[in-house]
Image 1 (cartoon, rainbow over the protein chains, first blue to last red):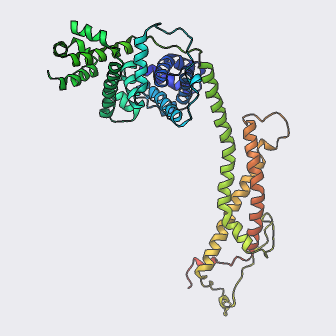
Image 2 (tube, helix red, strand yellow):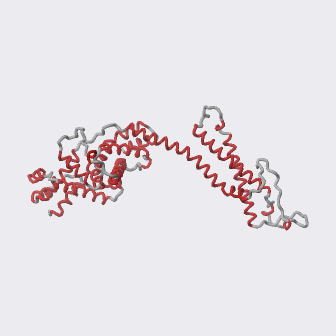
Image 3 (cartoon, rainbow over the protein chains, first blue to last red):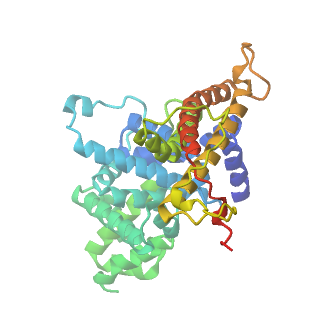
Length: 188
Length: 230
C-alpha cells in the first residue's frame, strides 16, 4: 500500500496528470469529511478540499515517504481548516439571515435529530479538541499519527481526545438528548 | 469500581478501540450508579453516531480545478526562474565589479584606452630604484601598499579577460539569430535570458576595459620582486 502510494506520489511529482487525478479521487471524501466536520459549512469545506490538494500536490516532495501518507494529508487539511476558523474569528460576523440559510439538500439520514445534536455539540468544542477527536474516531488515526499530524506530543493528543469526548458527552447530557440511552444502559 | 475511575476506564477502553459497554466492570458500575450510566450512555451515543454516519459527498468534483491550479502554479514557478536567473547573474557580476568601478570613479582623469589593443606598458621607475652602476641588478621590492595595488590591478585584468571571453561566447549564441524559428535546443525563454545577460555584460566589460587599460599603463615593473637581490 505504502509502496503504491510512493509510486503514485513520484508520478505526481513528475507532473503525471492521471496520477494527480487518482490521488485526489482516492482521498477527497476523507478530506471533505474532516473539513466539513471542522467547519460545518459545505462551501468552505469544498474550498478547503481544493486548497488542501493543491498544497499537497505542490509540496509532495516534503512528504517523508517512509511515513504514512494519510496523517500528513489530514494534517494539511486540518491546518487549513484551523486557519480558516481563526480568520472567521477575526472577521466581522455575517448577518444571521445569511449565516442560517437552510441547506436544502436531503441529508444523509433525514430526520436524525440526534446526529444533528452531536455535530452541533462537536462544533462548540475547541478546534484542537475537535480535530483530534475527528482524526481519532472518524478517520481512525492512531495517537502517534495524530501527534505527528497536529505537531504535538502523543500525551497532548490523548488529552485533547479525552477532553473532546468528555465535553461532547457533557454537552449532550446538558441538552437532554441521552435519556433514552441511559434507560437502555440501565436495562443492560 | 469507584465513580472517580469510571470515566478514565471508559477512555482507556475507547483508546484501545474497544466498546466500553462490553466491559464487565464498567457495565456493573453503570447498573449501580445513575450518573455514571448517563456518562456511559452519552459516550456510547456519540461514538455510535460518529462511526455510523454516512460518508459525506461533495457537490461537485473538484479534481479539474485542482489540477488546473497545480499546473498554473508550476507555470508561474518556471516564469519566476526565467526572471530570477538573469537578475541573479547580473547582480553577482555587479557586486564583483563594484570595487573596480569605484576605482574608475576615483580616477576620472585617466585616459580611456581599449584593452583589446593594449599599448605597451611603460614601467614607472622612481629615481631611487635606478641602479647607478647600470649593471641591471634587480629592483628593490615595492612598498607593501604599492604591491597590494599591483595585485588588485592584475586580478582585475584577469577578471576582465574572463568577462570578455564570456561576452564573446554569449555573442556567438543563437540569441543573435534573426530568424523567427528558435534554434534547436534553445527555448525562446533561454534566448531571452542570454540576450539580457549579454546586453548587461557588454557595457560593464567596456567600462572595466577602459579603467584597467589606464591603470595598466602605470603598472610598475615588479618582475624583480620575486627574486632576492644578489
